[in-house]
Image (cartoon, rainbow, N blue to C red):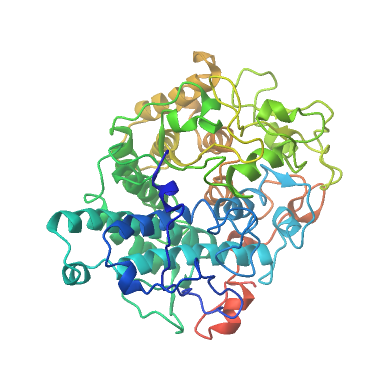
Length: 529
């Protein structure tokens, strides 16, 4: 077993769950078992706290209790489309220059044309998954207070263990609230201190949510396990530092003003924590990436125990089509879906000197005349269900590949960007060294190294694309650089036109879904929708 994620298997984990959004008529939670088990009975057994925490973690990996053939925890959502990381990929990658998808399901094309509305079902799916995850965390925190633990007769050692679980649940909640902050701005807000059941939550401002997350993360950073000391697949202090650094890097976008000095402070905490870069870039996205260096927090997957149509199953299978050989990727057949856009291809050198350039060109057109033809656009070969040592994962459909959430390379590049943007407490020479460490790994030598004069913002946005494509960074990065909407950067099919057109700035935020607005009169829609 690679992690706590798998210890939920076979356990009866029934929690009194209520979505914090008010659209319960559309998205009711599905009971996880037919047996009636009250929260009092569940939480009276010390062993169940770890199982419930496993369910909280597993909410990032799977969308239900029964695997891809079963139901989603949220009725009305497809098991695959409704999985957290797949929904996140759609929202963070498809609207950008990095990718588009050959499938014309529902309103999915709205993402890659950047012309969505508040009725888009895929946006509703992302929003719902975020707040379901938050509700899981809130419920665990309600049932693990010191008062409740004492009343249940747990020993001091047991209470200490459960308190560590609480810190992790708070960080996982902060991660999902960060996704809400970044994608939706001002959202409904509920913590464990609010009542359960049907009530209308208040809406918190974007700046107010930033302040809450900053306070929450600083409150728990010293309470979590030391960097690298926790079980694989669980969060620790470095996870909190990475999330804080990411928040501070984007603070101007979130209305909080420049916080680049703080970005440097927290990126440096991670850099100084003893992590090393994985020397083989490709291994970070292979079936044995749980052994790769430089991954600070990952969502584990396993071809037997964590099957889903989302996660790496989507990432690996959707990449493969055309003349590509599925066996090369450790799968039995491809889904003919994902490709990249020509403007993104051009960010790499024309030769193959940069080892991160993983494009399949045979039988593929670089330009995209038809969004729904797999052969239009170069295919991507980044995610694989094969091991760095040879051989495929245990299943030919469901990969063993884990999804990195925080990587050391991001700490390096956040530090460098914050220095260039004027943050104090760092140095330009260190920034160049960190960037060159990333590029030396990419090139296999120092031929791609840069000098201080090369370290510009325009270089950094491209370098972040080269390092993190197909990992869910791009939308946030482009917005921070002022390149996502408008006309300063155009790529094919931006705005629904092949040549690309300028788009409205309202698309820098996703709309609050119509279903939630209709159910909760306290909510105010984002501007322009």
